[in-house]
Length: 108
Image 1 (cartoon, rainbow, N blue to C red):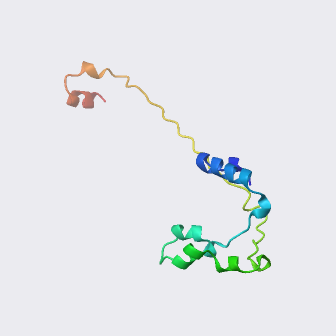
Image 2: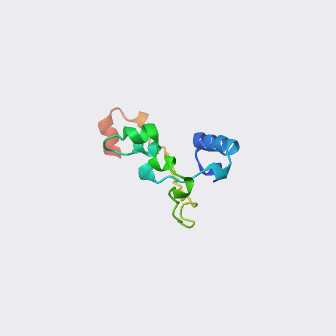
Image 3: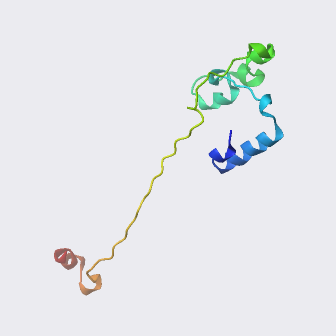
């Protein structure tokens, strides 16, 4: 996990977490059992999951869910780059030459 792949706040926070922990302390939690994901889902809240965490945490660690192998799909981030060019052009006509907007309109 490279913190440089994230935006500024997340990058610094992930960097702090990685410095203060070992990767062997990390485990995978399926999204449907992750209390942190509850805020991103629409529907009734699951207070028990939020307060107590996933039930598998109370079991032996060799029974915990295993992360499916996604290959390199989760490692590569695709970023779209958008380039906007705004070219302002000046009028070739001196608008102060016309006494009113109607005459300017007719001239154009």
